[in-house]
Image 1 (cartoon, rainbow, N blue to C red):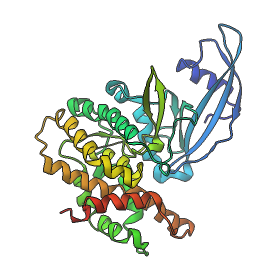
Image 2 (image 1 turned 90 degrees about the vertical axis):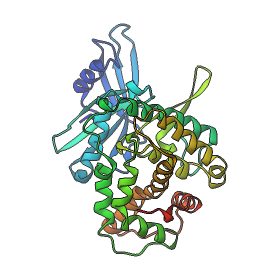
Image 3 (image 1 turned 90 degrees about the horizontal axis):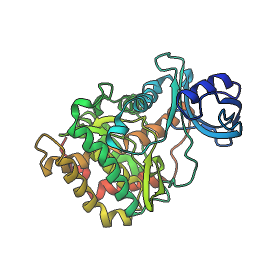
Image 4 (image 1 turned 60 degrees about the vertical axis):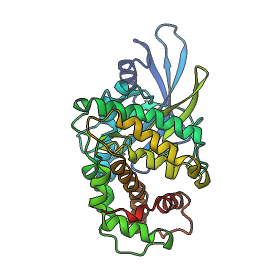
Length: 347
């Protein structure tokens, strides 16, 4: 694993990735302040100090390391999903912007894995609580639409390791937590949570899509970096652990419900949803009628609850945590479910 003492390994890794020039040598690796835990893996930021072979100058390269150890065995397959994504050509073929990947190790070992990425810094990331503007949401949907459309047009190129939503690793993980849970639900969540869990398999089949394509699976604004490029606003995406084969409405529903203030979402949601449907329908080889698309969108609004509910319940069951008094992001999700009357969905 990449540590402060692995200078030889790090030199070889970064030279192979052409992140530093041939013959350059790492002389120091310093762990930065923001190391910690993500939801499904651990993270650390390292500053790699090296001697540049060509100029002889001392240079620095910030890297972002995601890693998982033996204590996180239930999420191994989810983490491996992201490694496989970076090893594939999906982002290149679809022309979407993602961080540079310098390497990965440990896949299939059962002991631990790591993924070494370009450190994008902190600027340009928007918290879900602060929410995106309508313009940023439209930009993000247009860009992820490249991935959706590309994989619809070239379904034969979609790697076999990407699972349909009902069998996706993140689905299995959430089901293993939610299905055995018999405890109470907060009043805000009770009706929708019970409906989702009772009808989980049916909803999963609906969001697997009439025209399934590769979807990000956790498409909210904290997994996006907005930045200026050639005089225009651009976006790149991170965190592909929940990648799956399903309805493109999974990504549309996620960003609309989680990453906009409710009042802003209501102003633009119909236009953005319909526009994305038109983009994807034109790339789909099957007939995808509006009624099926709308049904998938309603199911996706309900599916938005799956991962956050599982995370909350896991904390309650394994760590003795209690339900909080406020759920600002889940409140937005419930509002979207109510606005679209998603609980009327026939499963």
